[in-house]
Length: 80
Image (cartoon, rainbow, N blue to C red; front, side, top):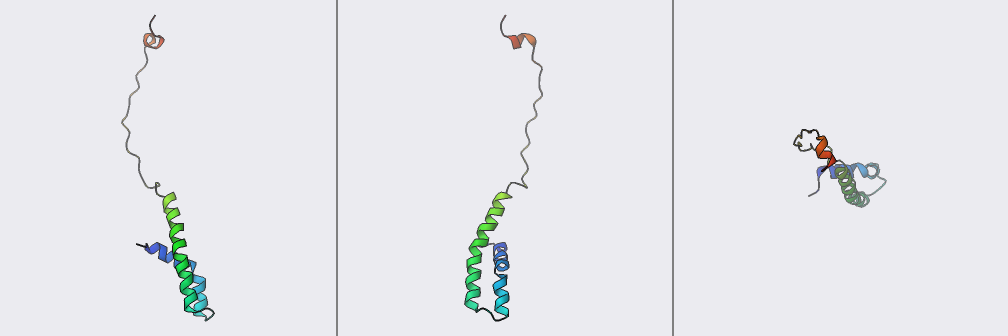
């Protein structure tokens, strides 16, 4: 299913053609062709943005706290 954000972005990308249609410089088939070309391009661009920003809102799982213990001198040197 196509996300609404993709359709809005494709509409924004084809806005110059929409304006040219309103002032009768281009016909409806050219307008629809440009919009249909803009839809997969917008989907790829927004998928890239979603991929890059996917991990920004996630919290890390809490880590179990570890209390450090001092090393005894006899244990660190090995057998004597």
